[in-house]
Image (cartoon, rainbow, N blue to C red):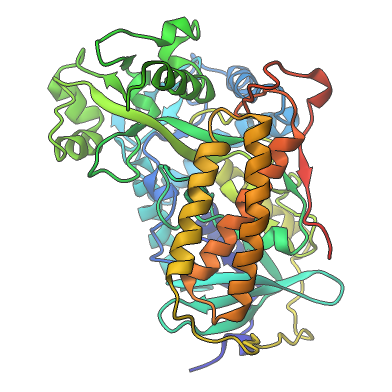
Length: 527
């Protein structure tokens, strides 16, 4: 078998969501691309996106309106120039997806536009209620056809490769089946590993969302930004047999009402927009009602619509919920909030460049400034499209980095590490990190809870680090180390923001502080 170290890789892309796949496709026109993904190519957060992608496609809508909606949701922390850039490029990026074979839902040969919370107009392109799955299908097929792209599935990036000057030169990658770790040297490395929802006990994210790219960038010294802003999706299905199944924002966009067990609506008491308020407001309202009443869940009522409409507009959701014995045409759906999306991440410029030379980040792994303190619904898939395009444009204009012909990647050193015979250590620490984050660093925070969380994470990090270096790495150990690093970043960033803004809501600082209308930057302390 040929070692990866002997192959020429111009661009190493880590991750196979919308941002990673589009980056690989576009960079393949500039050189040889190796795309590494930790499971099957289609297993990503993108694949689970139900709602759609936001873009101004109607004469009744306008760029200015989309910009305004994004800025309002972002609670004063969006980079307005980035918002305008993204919104203005949206229609072109959507057409590009259609050219690549994405089949958006149409009505009478006109694309059907949905409405979601926080949007003032219908501008959500969707493929029924499985938009992410349809996008993944089309992009994976396109990447597999691309002659200059080598797709490596079931491989997990462990850490970034750096040269003596600190520049990124690729990554150490583990074969999940054998456990073997090899260096993949590359001229430029793109982090597109998605989010970190598995840092929390309850999440809408798939099991792969362990913040790998964020953690690797952090350990490599990259500047991180706004890690305190974790978006909780207000409506995740509450059922003992359901796992990670969210109920799209589009349900409330089509008139769904949130009710208590007795049938009483509560959202009008929290916001004049009621169920169409931004996600942070809806999630906090549900959280407050659950704590006030002691109930385990609230209910999303779609019974105003006939069954035919629900089966046509939300076929996947309808069938999934029906499989649990709930007919949404006649019965309100039990829901709770769950961790969903990271607005913060690896800090990048408008071209996707991080603070580490030769290292780039796109998609949920990156913090571009588009989302600010709270992401507007369906702007995330759009962000992945726009910044994958901008990254490729930048590398094309700069002539792209020269292949690292003179860089000799050192093999992975196992040292005196031994095979672990105590897997329970991993499962115990994994569970403790996630419960700690849910209980102390969740939807509503306090200084005392955050301080407790940080103190406990310091102990856990020491224990996890010692275990990591003393044992032969496995995928579970690598992911545990990553969620611990991400958890630490979130806590430190949350402690640094002594105000309530967007997704960061603290009972000790209930108001916005104009002096803190700025990003929260973070770097790993040097030893």
